[in-house]
Image 1 (cartoon, rainbow, N blue to C red):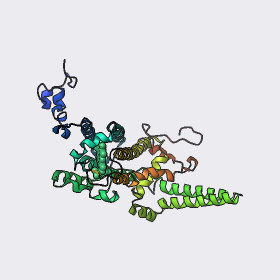
Image 2: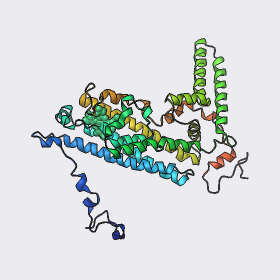
Image 3: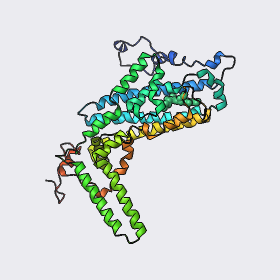
Image 4: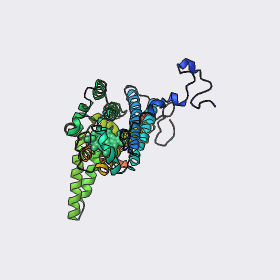
Length: 388
Ligand code: HEM
């Protein structure tokens, strides 16, 4: 029987493939399947669960590798200044893949939880000083997404010292800190959102007017309230919302929030994201909107992984033992669950700036046809809905 990995019509000699290569050779299984070295097996008391511990970590590292592979290709696509719709679809497909892999990684924690703390204790001593803290690929993944040194919790800001004299690791980390991360590239792309041009549709000007109108109406409604307690409550609410909106309309407030690490996106990128969210039903914004959703999914899933991991750590070693990597263990990991590690935190917070559909500025005919994907563009409709 021929190998299912071989296509009968392909001339493999031209591809430089080894003659007669079969499944195990192609996948180099001799290397992968012979890499589960149980340290406890070298003693007189082999621990059954050490095998699961090794395989689980290796499976994680393989998936990290695939995610990095996808992320690098997505970052490449985003670097094109004239990103075309066909490429947006490719980005979408690859982001979807990353999201699915992360879902598997979140659930995979459960398999390791079938090991009891007592079993873990039997071989934990052999690991020292090894720890997931030293996972090069995990750090690359974080950096390539856009986690910055200054946003990491203090203990984690010197994360690269663990690579010691490993020049290759240090170079890879250095490059990943210097190269534009996915979050930088996404911002540049959002800044180019059609419709933001001041001399064109001027979305931001129109949105600001719509918000002012909404707040004015709400204030009038609050003032008309006869019950004093409810009136005060409503007026306070309008005042607070006014302040919140001020934080996006006043660029200096926005910059101050960026300095404090509470906001990450540039002012223009935020405008693009809000515009895409409002007009996501327009054909040209449909894929960009899905991209924004997937970016949030990535952040969410990594946070869920951190959460599942920290729960497992507490179950295995409690909340006071140090980690094998030298951190405070559970306490350190718990501190990484904050928004500091969410690179797309602004997308999560977009909901704060949404306004009711009836207040969303209507698209002009020109803008609508720009966002249309119908071949040849859209013919603007007259008042009577008849085509011109
Ligand atoms: C019995 C299971 C596990 C225990 C008890 C455990 C424990 C810990 C501890 C205590 C830390 C903090 C650093 C330190 O060692 O001082 C840590 C970090 C880490 N572990 Fe685990 N771990 C387990 C399984 C896993 C698995 C399956 C992975 C998958 C790759 C993993 C990946 C990581 C990563 C990436 C970090 C660094 C997190 C960060 O700094 O944000 N761990 N682990």
